[in-house]
Length: 165
Image 1 (cartoon, one colour):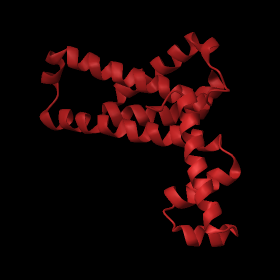
Image 2 (cartoon, rainbow, N blue to C red):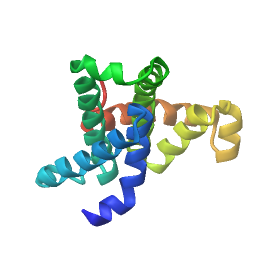
Image 3 (spheres, one colour):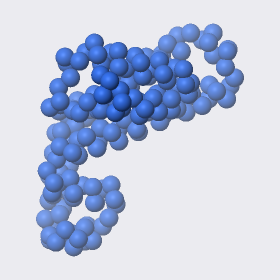
Image 4 (cartoon, rainbow, N blue to C red):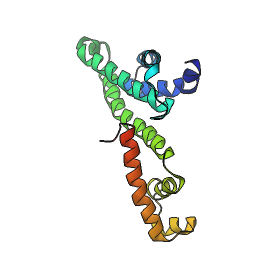
């Protein structure tokens, strides 16, 4: 657990801080994340996802729980000014894109090199098919096939990771 904290604790703290906008609450969220991870350590399956992905999933639930707890105690909102509350609401919107990026990165790692390269170059780098095909030294039709089948494989991987809807 110490190694996991050393490797991912700071990142989890930043995620919680962006969402909760309160350093103390973010520290509590990280502590709760590792406590839940410790209690559920026997359920982690490295074949389904990396430790990092698993911890971020737990952290997401901890942050949502913390936000719900705040909503259940409206008297706490009287202790903060309107700007602080507004910043907290904006922070909630930032959690999902960060988590999504992490999950997509993990899913891409599980694809074959050809499919991963085709998807990264065409979708993430937003390069045109003819340019990517020339760079890879394959016909454009081959690249299009790799992208098509890469997207199908990515969908399957994300379903296996239980993140696809």
